[in-house]
Image (cartoon, rainbow, N blue to C red; front, side, top):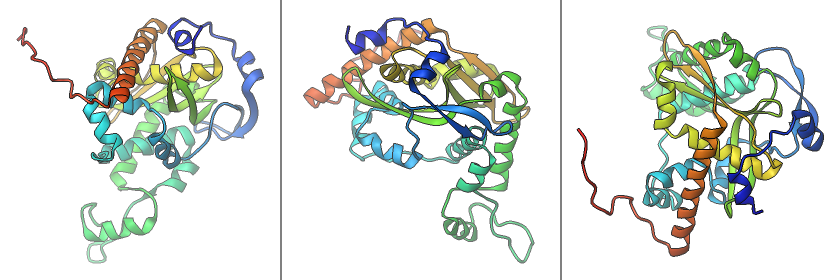
Length: 303
């Protein structure tokens, strides 16, 4: 049976103890919601910075690249050639900061981010984020800078997650930002999982405006295709499909958090869609043909 065929068929969830005995090595890892605990870093997980991971995206297919291709092969191609710059909005900065604060803990957050800004001597208040003084101060920090308001938002969202029992339990033991590289559907691929635990599987942390619409957001923004890609690439290394959970948290009051387990039937369906998309990508690579996806006439048949 080929790897691709294995990726499409249901896999038995091997007990975590068996998985750890095959791949695990003990390491003390400080958890964000408690004292340091003895956890296990599976040997197949690569620990590397986000910068190194992003640099290797030129050699490996990622879930975001696959999403670009699904939207438009031409978009994918132009981004790969460096003709379109990746947008980095303030909301993205806050999202990355939340991931660091929640998944890697307060010490890692302090090391990787600066908070605040320079004080205006005339008013005794901080300069605004759009002022020249703030920009000069931020450039001197040598790392990403959060305004006081952005930091407060991160802390409130982190508290929302901390106060949710199931979310806290999912993140009580595991490894943040673990990288896996493997060939999937005859394409070199890489994933960077928000959180992985041999007992509970993959956990993906998302922010949202309204938790009541989280499931709709997951469909709209391709979250299901993203985690199905994670699960499938990981399965190429460990030979089984691990469970997948989402943790969602609101970006506004009351900063509610929620937990969703993705049903295996849905993951199987979306995995097949991903594999069909990768097959189309392989054809585009072979022929160097990159359509927009809108070449044919479409029909408006609803109001």
